[in-house]
Image (cartoon, rainbow, N blue to C red):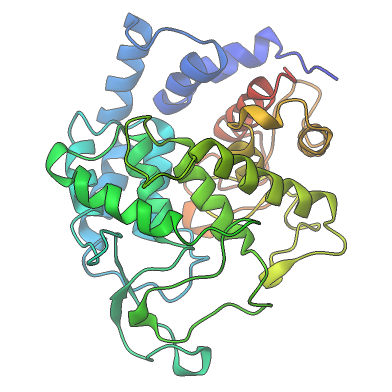
Length: 338
């Protein structure tokens, strides 16, 4: 079934915040990035007080923040993910400064590090450390790539870091994996299972790699298909399979934003970027479940929210959200269902 974006809803999106207008013009209407309307929307977004405040929050928190739960939606790298999705570019300020901050702490392999504390009873050192996990650092890499990639002087290290992470891939997605600094930590589940969230984030990285990135001989397109099939298989078997306690049940299926955790909109958004999923019945079923939550005008009201984002239009459950509506229609358009 093809969904049709009503003219009234299109106009409603274009009348929204500049980041909504920008992504609507680029992702739904296919306008040229060099057009006057797109440039004006981008400049308005960069100058907007909420975006400026978000950038400051990332810059202020990056070096001091300690990750105690990867599910916290207000972590600095989660805020960076929203800014990247909104369309902030590394070629301009403050995007350039944010990219350098994101890549300011790298492991010997070139993997971005975060301040993190894993308790002893979870197998960690029980104290603050600089380390990485496949449920945090790929989000940083994906954001940098979405913003246009690293500056030239940091590209070799970033390439090395991505090669290191790509080397962790299995036949079915990516495992629960952490750096040596985090001790014996591993999420609750069978060691041989793929970690759905790690697989989602690594797929997000792989999709955005430039063709000239040195991946050490890995055929990126093949690995993209493997990761996509892993996630679609989990959807198809959602009643029986939930590795590492990542369920695709009732809470998973509630529409929410921004794209910072393992939920329907985030998974569908990432999968919709894979050409191989366009005609897949599992993907079509996922989009159908998504659109079953639209109102008569094709607008989406959040069914679940992150309290940390309560000041944004997707941080409430009483009225349609332009940003969430944009995300849903973007998914449908990419998959040929709009």
